[in-house]
Image (cartoon, rainbow, N blue to C red; front, side, top):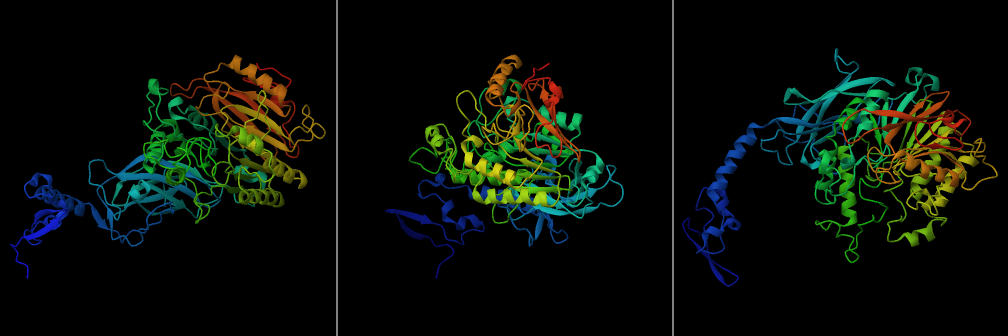
Length: 626
């Protein structure tokens, strides 16, 4: 039998230790010898158990006051990558909620749309542990005054597992309709998020001329927003001056780079290491979502997004990036002090992206698949591809450029993976079969063949020639009209007729006859021009003129201004208007329309004269800028 006052001798590493009996005190921590000093003569090496016990009791009392019964609430959160299941949670947090990053919406269908917010515990209160979720309610109205009953409402739970982000699917909505929404603390309805606006798209069978009430649908298209390089004024112009119906982001929504002096003068400072861990990526996304133009753009209309490479890391492909892979021997894990190798880094980036972006999970068992399709009446199919992370063969990461050059024309080489490729062919064919007027393809890198001086960009489609050839052959052989390919990534503006590379027999670059479609490639929101950092318009135009001379399919080139473009999609025409920002070093909506292009159904080329024969920036084939 053990006496309550007995002490036991324990031999540990050749030392005699005195260990207090388990029942020597009411303090429960004294039962755990891990808290004790390993040496009797040096008690200061142990923990102050009375202080710990007092602190715990105080926390438990606070914690109990800040939880309530969860049974009245029904968790309807959209399933997130790595999220918890709260269906049997006995309590929810009631210690106060802070909607830290406003609201957002995305991936609209004809009767539903995703709504997003971030609901974190109020600063200064004890945080709930992983088993105690935060509950927020959501409400959706069909009018900005929020009169009448909500058309949809519910509750959603979140926790630290998903960085306190919340995604719900508002459903039962009317097609082709604008809505207003907000979130609120389930335990205190007076605590609400800011009000957001979103919309649904027309149902797939709506006649093209009736989509969006017969008014052209405006899609504002962006890429490459790099925080320290400037303010995201392009989003502000799209919201305030263009009144976009939806925002389409082609990737590089954020960058993984570590801090440099680039943004210090304007107060846009990054962390001091390159992103590697889940905390790194979450923190960077949270930082980007402090830009006021981005915040307001997310709250004003739904977004449709795909990633490029920098949402993970530079020049990514399926097994690595320019500075990371899974080999410790080659230094592929040494890019960060965390020593995180590529696979873990990619998983962390993908998880954070799904948490922070209002994007649907396409396949429950494949978190990496974000290629998906939107049928917007009989007006258009918007097909979003992933040419970076899904199943991309090795790309040009600098050190292997000579190798990749020998692979560029290999027949089995793919920038998108064979599964996605076959799916894409099927989408194009079914879009034609269902009678959609336009087939708009959102993807990352420049599709057209583009000779730059004496070389090609092997990190774009020029490094995957046979994959591009198969797509062009599918379009040609199946007589698929009205294909419009979008691209970002290059930090410059390019507008081209689509044709088979070096085809001087079928394609006439002067008239556009024989083209298979059109490509609109946009410049960056803020990232530096690929023509040269801070290059002036006149110097950029010299380079544009040389590019036009070397690439007859290329009809317009502009490399100085940062900005975006807007597609106005109607049944009788498609217009692309490019916008240039005058200054991104201050917050403003100071921009201008730099060029406007028209595509008519059935022509499969840029309508002539291209851009009406004049542009406000850049250089046209057979024309000069004003």
